[in-house]
Length: 583
Image (cartoon, rainbow, N blue to C red; front, side, top):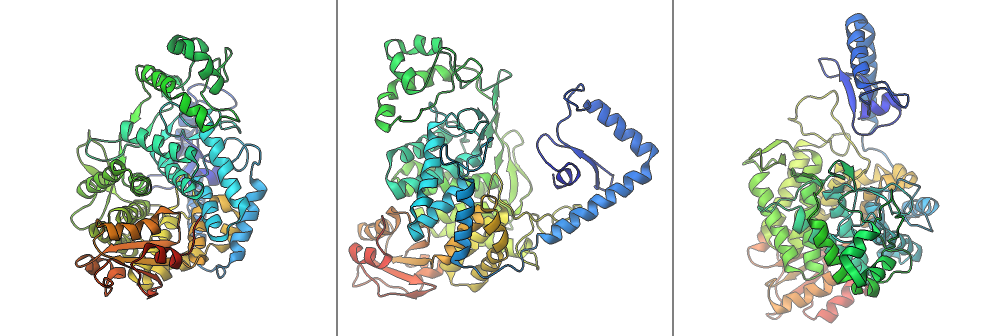
């Protein structure tokens, strides 16, 4: 893709690249039709031209391949995470000002169509609001979250989000549903619910995760990758409705439903209706339509569904693991926690080799996992495991997350700063890639920084924290200038600047006294807090618990900053005071 962008100025899928036998690109493009149209040659014509060039002008081709290879190597060198300025609140101010300039104050989101769900940007805005109480940060996040949840990009019947909206109104989606989008969005809606208490956000979290549980989960616990946009050869056919279909299904209840979900005779997309909630719809109206939605959902279930990509990818499963683990804890949904545990156990049994190294992909038809894992597989899974640990407080999940971080440091680290995307024993490539920009998912480097920062607080080991802080500081300028492209990094910067705290709760995590302390810490949105709980053998695995004792036989909470702790308390009210009041 880097070669295609260098050759043509833009990238995209599908992608067409011609390589020399030693792997150097000399021609690149995206889509070529079967017959010439719209100024594009037919794919057959492209192939014939490439064959003629290779046979008749080999020297020119080799020269071009060499130039492209040199360009890509120089680009890779420029991506070293070095330099940068010292982190300061000025960075957050610059990023917020940049987001405000691109914010769509009428329709939500940033920039123009097509609009992709900006989950990482929204997470950053919620973090900033939690730290600084700036109302505009919360407004930008809430306005966007509400517009997306009311739009056609959200499946109003079955839950879950489509990949992106083709229009600025969030109405007409590209109907493909991706696991990673729904993982990231479920988590940010969960945090928005913690901050605001608004029922809409909780409903979206639960409907989205219920959709994943119902339709994207393997019996063994793994999560599938995606649903296609098409069914029966037509994009969106599975999801859209005519007015006649709605009336036939709902009878006397049709009129109210059609008014609520903006269903008309002419439709809002190619003669059909994409269900959405126009401005002014509230949660009471949505609740009144529950039976009608269920009727339509059951009818839709009889249609030919879109194709399912049933690969289980380690990185994307790590994102969804985090979403289920955190939602299980915050919403008191034991079924979500059980799904998270089952997922972690599946990944441990399937994707982890005996030496601890990870594999990338598993598919039931193949019967086994395969391919060397990338940086994002290690980082995303470690993040999910830390979320699972802070839900179950089972030391094995913390131990595995730490193992993965140590493997990242051993096999992916770049001496110039940050991490390569491929391990030191990966197959030889034209150059060893190192992507630092967030895209549809966080960059592997950005997520690695988050994981290392949190591990630094759990363990007190400077090698974790210091490595991550250098990485984040090295991207000061890109974060300030391009906040939407480095939003996950900005979250890490906000974490560093937010003077994060550690909480060690000594006691049985299942006991009532311990739970009361944990509820105080974990009920509210506290993005700058890490929490460990347990005693005895758990303290041997999680250093934050070591050398801490109960208080007069009762569960005790120790609020610390970089392992320097305040006087322990057993009273939840006293703990709330030490942690600081939260909205």
